[in-house]
Length: 83
Image 1 (spheres, helix red, strand yellow):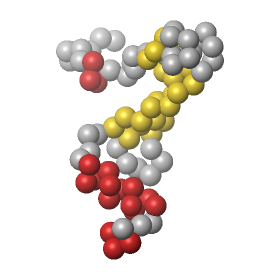
Image 2 (cartoon, one colour):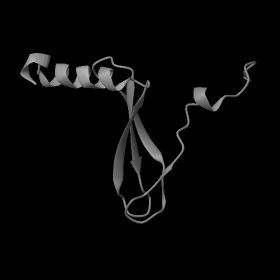
Image 3 (tube, one colour):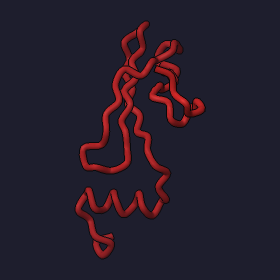
């Protein structure tokens, strides 16, 4: 069945391959996993078909540096006073 909506790469379920750091071949995305803590992130695993090298990339909403810092402190259990 066809969709009546216009095609958009932002809404696509496909992930473009990346280059392998080891041999330079394409590494297609072999797994996409949502963050287990309900944060708006996704972990993408890429694997090179030529050499088997794996790489994991984290993608998600563009958070500010302050948001990232506070999330890291919360995960690590460090308060602002302890810095």
